[in-house]
Length: 400
Ligand code: PMT
Image 1 (spheres, helix red, strand yellow):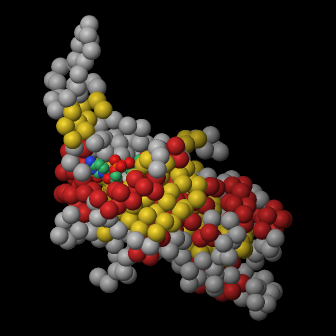
Image 2 (image 1 turned 45 degrees about the vertical axis):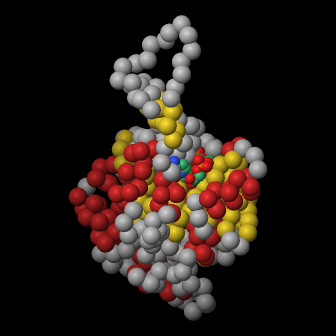
Image 3 (image 1 turned 30 degrees about the vertical axis):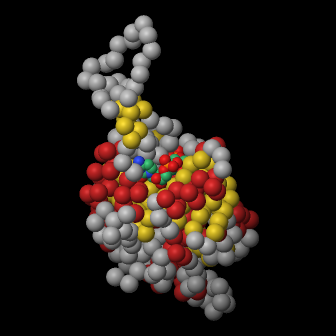
């Protein structure tokens, strides 16, 4: 995870049973190349020992506001620990800890460094459902959010106390992913991005239709990567069953004609249009009202070509920066370049069907006027971040 390499993270651990997940979180951060300074509260130490974190991070664990040395050896750990850190991340964050931070209380090392920090603060709440739902906790969480603190979760489900509901801490991997997303460079800040994703479904009759096996994952990953890069993002999605990335405006559509209408109505003021959708090239001439009955002979379908949404957008006089995709089963470079020239696109992302269609990973080649730029096989979010980085390099900085 390049964004965490050589970054220093202050990991606060307060007193909840979810503290055991903080050990895994520390391990993930260290594995990604981060330097991790753990601050363990007195209550946190009831659940996990300092020795655990010391072994995982290879660094001293901080427990005491009145520690003799501090990072710079001057007895000011509450100042020295957050200085130069990429973020303070508190997981688990108890109701009590959040209440104290929301009110500016600084009565132990962790709350004091939260007040003294000059870097972002992220908290992952963990508590019993009744505690989470109390008006006091909700007020404090709202205050933290209003103060610019990022609140990660909580999740819902079975709790250690035996009750069920909201208040479970996110899993270590989810918290790690959220921090990595938070730290992505804001290279599309101020940009408005429109994307298409997924397949389209072209109805034949009330129960049947023409479609393809696009899962929508590549387009959703790009929407996520654009949000992480600071853009305002609208995603026009064909029929897929994926969760909308937080912060993305989503418009659900079914057919190519629906997708075209949605794109047209959402296009005004967009700086970037990324067409990831596998739009059906053809649709039935007639959609039959009643279910087609099986006959003795063959069935002939008459199809008509769908409008090319990307080509139409790219041909507009004030066209946004248009990025096309090309999924090919062979001759990737030849066909992707042909699409780039035919639609007059500055950038086409080429992928082989066997690498990119349906699965969780992809391997792509970016085609632009400067040549070919391969991005190696990786999960789709990593690939999407690489594509966003390339787009940011190609467009001029936002001055609005
Ligand atoms: O959804 P996943 O399972 O994650 O898979 C991702 C993907 C393989 C579908 C994606 O990475 C991809 O390659 N999408 C483009 C598929 C394709 O080959 O499209 P195309 O060659 O039919 O179209 C070329 C470009 O024109 C695409 O950007 C497409 O969105 C756009 N197009 C095509 C036809 C049409 N009527 N309107 C369009 O906008």
